[in-house]
Every structure is written in structure tokens, then in C-alpha cells.
Amino acid sequence: MVKKKWGIHQTRFLVLCCAFLLILINPFLNYYFQINTIQGWYQSFGVGKLWFVSPLEGLESILVSKQFFLPALIAMILPICLAVLLGSVYCSWLCPISFFSEIIDGLKKRLSGSKWITDKILLSRRILWFTLIAEVVLTMILGAPLFVFLSPPGLVGREIMTAVFFHTLAIEGVIIIVVVLGLNLLTRRFFCRYFCPLGATLNIIGAKRNLLLVQDVSICTSCTLCDQVCPLGLTPSQGMAESIYCWNCGECTAVCQPKAIVFQWGKGEEGG
Amino acid sequence: MKRRDFLKIAATSLSAAVLLPATVRSMALTKSPVETNRLRPPGSVPEEIFAGKCIRCGRCVEVCPYRSIYLLDIRAGIFAGTPLISAEETPCYLCMKCVEVCPTGTLLKIPQNETRMGIAVVNKHICHTWQSLIICRTCFDVCPYKETAITLNQLRPIVLEYSCVGCGICTHACPVTAEDGKKAINIEPIYAWERVQW
Image 1 (cartoon, rainbow over the protein chains, first blue to last red):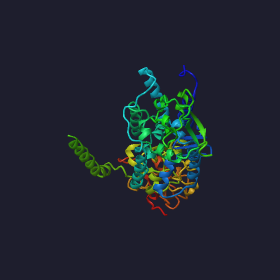
Image 2: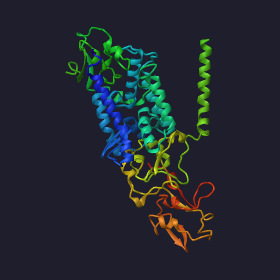
Image 3: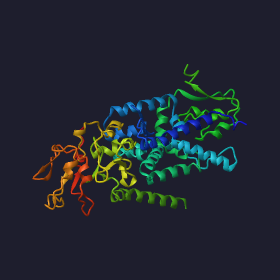
Image 4: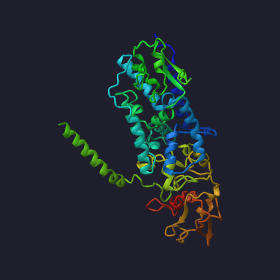
């Protein structure tokens, strides 16, 4: 059975688990043991003096305050480099919302007994860009960044911290996380596909990424298994894995029997 | 029927768009949570750009050893997720750890004595010492900048506003609580309303 074998899906889920455990354990270390070496969650993450700032949140902060703050810019370098080289791997390999979505997908498969999940609502992918533009413009009009306090991945971290530190939960986080995860029941990654401004930002940054899922048309048997397994509903069988929307989760490589789709560094023959 | 549906949706969204600013204003979603005894952590930028600069990463809250800093939720509108200190509950003990970890410069690195979270103001109408009821000098005793930020004049406390850092330790310690929950010495965060210089 292919399902039982350890593959890229299992590796990715393990990475997602670790990434989630990191932001789950952190508040406890901070609160009960006063260990402040590792701090924060994926809006801003600090390991000692090494800081990370999420690119979209950092950009919003600059746009609204109209001021540059060097440490924030430096903290944005590493995440941006990661996205430039590897594409939006944050979304598929680290994001806590992705972690929950994977669990929901697993439960759905188990409950339905079917190996595949059908997506019920499909919209135009371009909505993603409109969301990003609308979010940035609205942010600048209001003079207050919106994504910083309404971002689902950020809210997961904030809710964990609020629960540990203040033994309560913030209402907006509960609502947004439940809605975002609930939409997964209709369409896999519904929010990520069409409405996540952070995902859109990382997609743009990673538009010319080095790590690509390249399809070898000569081997491909057009079985379209990859189209069915893609959590974003892309069609790798038609070369969409190289498009700007792909988040390099690598699910299609695992399911492809003739290994027609593989990870590749650089464009290969085209890049020369 | 289709056109009717469309018109219905258009009318609803239009009215929602028209009513939204009014709703927002009535709910005070853009009103700053900073007021008497509700202070920003040390080194804060003015309120004008605070909501814009802060990315709500919560690291100041996580690092605060006294748990003075807490996070606001969506009831604070666009200020949701920003840090705040309630002076009368847990004041700031000026350890200056939060300014070290803020990644966006919302809390700027400043020396302890240059912190200006506000100014302590004695309410002489309810202060027992000023009312000549008893001789209490609690605020003077607890002040980390004794004689520089607060002095006793004929045993009555007087705040020297140029040196007061606005940490709120005096407010926390003050034994007199008025009916509105305020103390006889309160912190007025006047520096939060400074204009930003570009």
C-alpha cells in the first residue's frame, strides 16, 4: 500500500507538527519557566537575538507608520529569502492553519472512507490578488494594519498565548479560526486558496522561485492523480505546479506512479 | 428574478457600506484604549501610529516578568492585540525587557529614567494627606525615583512632572480608591498624544 509508506506527505505533516508544537510549547516555557530565548509565533518569532518578522505584517507596519525600522527590515530578510528560493513553503510546511487543515483532511478521508476529497465550491484564483490589494489599500485608508490582528495563523499563536498567560481566549480568534477551518469542509484550503493575503504575498515573492515541481511530459501518463491530490486544487498534470499559485507541498510527487513530477532546483533546461 | 436578486444584494451591500462608518464610530472601534491609568509599555511611539506600527506579535507580553502587560482583544477595535498596562492593577516595574524584544520599533529602546509612560497626578480632593485626614506617604515611599519624581512638601506629595516616568507604582500602592475606581494618584498618559515628527 502506498498510503502506509513513509513519504513526503508524512514528512510534511511531521514538520507541521513540529512547527505547531514550537508555538504551543513556547508560551508555557515563557510563562512557567521564564525562558525567553525562544519567543513569539509566526508573526514575529525570536530565537535569542535572531528575529523573524512576517513579510506582510512588516510591510503593513511600514506602510501605515511610514517609517523604517532597521531591526524589523533585517528580521524580514530570512523569511523573504526563504520565499524567494523555495516559494511559499511557509504555507504548506509551517503554517498552523495548514496543520489543522491537514488534520481535518485526514478526518474527512477517514470518515468518508474515500481516498479523495472533492471540492464543492470553486472560485477564480485571481481573487487571491484582489484580496491582497484590497487588504493593503484598506489598511492604508484606515491607518491600521488589518492582517496583523486578523490573520488566522497569527491568531492561532495569539490564542495559545492568551490561553496560557491569561487563561482566557479572545473572541475574534475563536471566530476566525473556526470559520477558516470550517470552510475546509466545503473546499480544501478554501481560505488559503482565495483569501489569504499572506499566502498571496509569499506567492508573489516566490514567483521566480528556485525550487519547482517540474513535470516530465514524456513520462506522464495523464492519470490526473496529481490533480486530485493537490490540496490547492491545482492541475499539476497541465503544468500548473510551476505556476505562481503552487506552494511546493509535494503531494503530487508522492502520488505520481511513473515519477513524472519531481522537485527540481532551478528551471533546468530552460534556465540553461 | 435574477435581476431582483441582484438589486437586493446591491442595495444591502450599499446600505452596509454607507452605514459602516457610522457603526464603526458608534462602536468606537478606532478609539485609543489609552486613558488615565491605561498605559502603553515603556518606549512606546505615540498613539497616532501605535496601531499601525505594532504587529501584535505579543512578545512584550511574553517577556514581561511581572505580567504587567496584557493584550487587548477585538473590543478595542483596530487596537486589538496591542499591549496595555493597567497601572492600578499591575504597574510597570521598569525592567525594560519589553523594549529589548519589540521587533518593529513600536517600543523603542530607551534608558529607564527617560521612560515617559505618563505623569502621576495627585487628586488633592481625595488624597487623605492633602485633605489633612492622615499623614500617608505611600506614593513617595514606593516611587523608584524618590525626590526626583516626587517630593514631600510639608509632608504632602508633590509630583515633579519633568522627572516622573509614569510607571504607575504609586497608583498601584495608593490606598485611596474613589467611586470611579481611580486612585488618589493617577497616571495621565499625556505623552501618548504627541504628534509624530517625520
